[in-house]
Length: 410
Image (cartoon, rainbow, N blue to C red; front, side, top):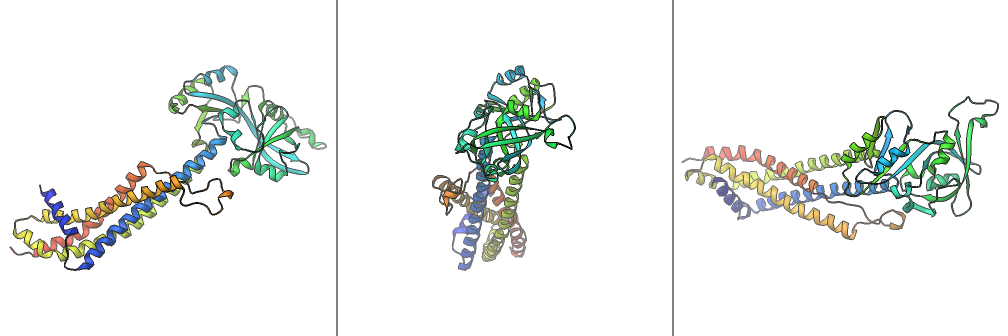
């Protein structure tokens, strides 16, 4: 009963006529500040969500859903029986074997270090590499390869003409022949059939993709040795269950990483940036909430006669205090609700219509800034703003109301 009565009186005080119009103005400024701050928090957090999803989709063009690597050593053995076991796991769509190592590429007179990655015929179906081909075609065979577009630019190579690329890799065994050091290297010449562009420097400027049997020949690995195994999963697959099943297939210690874990440092950095943006906006909200302190202080002063009246009618101090607590809560909750609606609307408009785009859209991968609204961000923003509003109203209510209540003579 007391809570309901406090809310009714607080609502009347908030929207009723004051003796001085400036109190209405300050109350409106407080609500607007809370509204704008809440909307800004939702929009900024949605921008980070959009960037996270967008960059993740770029990595997904090259990376498999799950990647299996040895915990110790560069390579491990994966025989045909183990690969069959992996393909038979519920939720697994396809499996590919990978053998990658560093090598030197030479095209004409130009030379560049690179990561040469040998793959089998299933790599194209476990990733989306064919969709990233910007010149030529995706064709991997014992005599054909594809190269990152930035790496090809550094070498001066193109796929539209017959381009022979020579790969040099040091022999894994034996000593270096000082007199004829070229004998310490294995080389193989391949034709570049396609250039891929992931729009990620770590891929486009470093990777050359060749047939895995050719890679084993160049790097002197045995027939069943791999440096990684890639797996493509069905959309509704239980990832944790698949991890457990995969661990049972191999005798050696293996590391199983999803797309985000394969780039843990990058996504961790984005998470830290999102957290810092949230903390900065929270600090701004705290400053904006100071207007609630001023608004409530002036309102309490304006309603001091009402406090005397309530006390004379038998109202306890707790009831009077709750009235102005509800006043601050109404300002905070009202501003937060409107801010959530406004921020969500702006994010939806950006997602749907791309209102804020790039001036030269042809030069970018996307035409508008990516955003993504998540329910958890809406809840966190709303809870943060309401909490700040409640804390901001505590000081003037406790101190000022208490003083006026004590001054009242019955």
